[in-house]
Image (cartoon, rainbow, N blue to C red; front, side, top):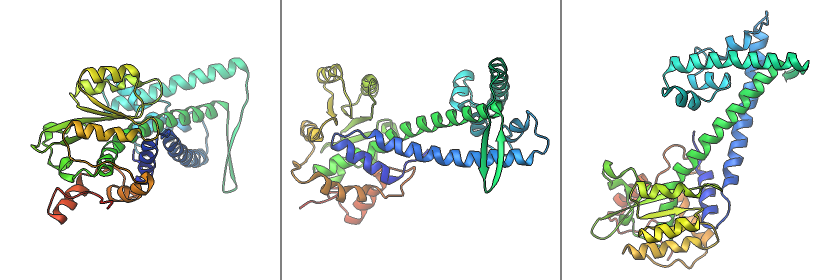
Length: 330
């Protein structure tokens, strides 16, 4: 699952202005899901047309076949998320996924068949593609609808997880650039493998690294900030923190920045000062500054590798000095 660079830029803009970034993920989710629905309906229509003797096994034959689909897709078509199978069997092995998918499909179909017979219902789902119409009876329709529901859930889970991971480093690099921190104080390319567990590192003049965590948390889940204790983090940047979170972090010497309201991002300068990291106050127009910073860190087409590491390394080589600023506002 990937996020386009333009969406990540929009998320960062909203986080730094205290806006709800979740609308960006929902928009992306809707677009990806609707495209999947169109493609899936096309496959359903052609699969049923290809089966002259339409029996109860046509869907099972066409959509639970490993020759045509990956184990992940087979699981979705059977009405299961592959993650559910992994949790149930503590294994993601291909054969277990296939067996579980086939068993679940049979159980699902039997349940649907029992319900429709009991309620004496009759519903037909008609798929029309290029003047060719295909009718699905109620049992087939419910199987298809269930598959789409599972797929939307899978896309949603993947997007929310990916959004958090892909925004972490660009967001921190953006904060550093806003407050004119020289690149060497946050150059992630020099980290040893043992220190790559944390989301981001800040460094002082003697090279001591300060682990930082970024948590994009939805409503009702503020205690996710507990990860800072598990990783011995010194800094937490989040969009939502409870009063208890803040109190506990203050008591444990953990610096925090909550991006909940306009100008909350300015608290990051206090963190830099406390860690003795060189910086300057930001007094300019935030959107104008982001217009300069974000294109340096991210391209619109960025997919998996959303990290400023390569950018910082290239710029340091070009300018032959890690003391250079990522973006100079003066």
